[in-house]
Image (tube, rainbow, N blue to C red; front, side, top):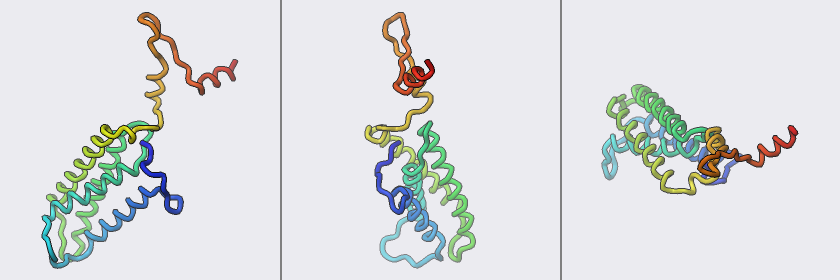
Length: 168
């Protein structure tokens, strides 16, 4: 998928900068001792799901794969799941916090929701799929075209034509 933005900060894509800042804020927020509630109380599981939803969306935005969008989703899910395990484990060392399997389940629910939304948006917004790098499978599919009902004629791309003419 082509980048949604071409902006960079010190030579680093904006998406990567946003991901790093988000991840650091998330780590900091989950590793400070519990503070007293002020204002509206949001259930802990909703906070976990929404935090990992945001993390997974940003991972999907940052990760670039050349062969399969499903590979991007798998990488994003595995990274978020590994961080969720690390996050829950290290919370045991923070005063006022404790690891919880239900928190991990909420984290994974947020990851899955993000991947589903990202995949759906990718299908519904055609601009997200324009100018994607072609894969080997795409090249093989474009190699042959049915020109009549009986014959199949190979198509030669400009790069293949120049390669053939240089060999001749």
